[in-house]
Length: 392
Image 1 (tube, rainbow, N blue to C red):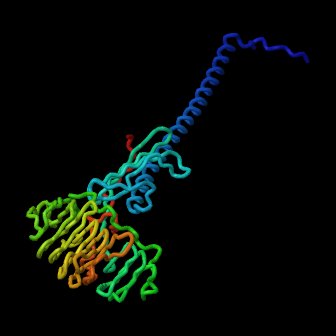
Image 2: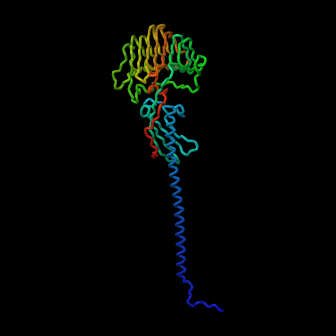
Image 3: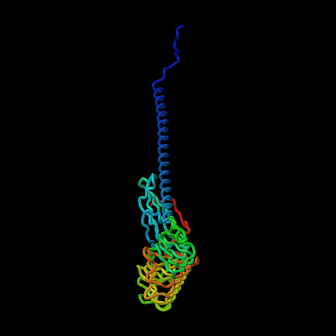
């Protein structure tokens, strides 16, 4: 059989072949565009995801900074940098720059400012890949120091048989009793040898070595007031500042040595600055406001002469020694509250052979907003916490 082509069949024309080619090219182009779009979309999504992740890292970094500053405010002894005295009387962590948190990316800059007594503003700036965001917080610390013993000595103390301590004593050195009358717990490096206990290694060694840095201001119940400056003249009348609005606790300060003559009373607080002393040459009675110290003396407390009497109904801080001059066998020092000795070495007594009676009074053993260096943090309140991560 012989095959013969159908006379009606036609080979595709050049025009038809051209149209088919165009259609193929269109389909390929469309596919390429779609593929490019998919790739571009994936790339953009990746970039967006990466940018979002980096921003989150910055936010987490700044929040870590807020928490780090809060930790150092709550634990100032752990601060990696020197503490500073704030404008409102608080010793605190000031912040620092270029802080790295281990292997985490970026660096932190922290700034801490004392904006009110016990209140701090924290600004945390986190930087990653050259871009920064900032977060902030406001923190309030409630601070006070409640002593639990009648007497606290920074160094070794040698008592005598005219000393009576009721309510215990603690010394970061040794205690030599010498027939002194004591009751309550005795804590010292030689505590077990005197019928007490050895000082634990965790004993609080903070003492107010620079307690007058914010005078003439003092703080009472969260508000700032202004103490009255004393003149250089000897005191022989009751100390009373009639400005009850600005000085409701009747707080006085002196940058000179102070001498009390005759019979004098102070229903308030006396603070000496710059290593100045107090001499009692008569009878002096001091009763501070609740939560305030009675006497804060940065140098010596001297009893001058016989038959002198000093009575303080509240905390007493003596930076150096309790001294006597001119013979003092019948003189008496009575402290009802707590005695805090900041003497760093040597005997506490020098030439004083009168009686010393120290009685612990729990209602008169707390100081707040005056001896900031030794005050404990009782509570922490977050007044504001903004971690939205704003661009500085």
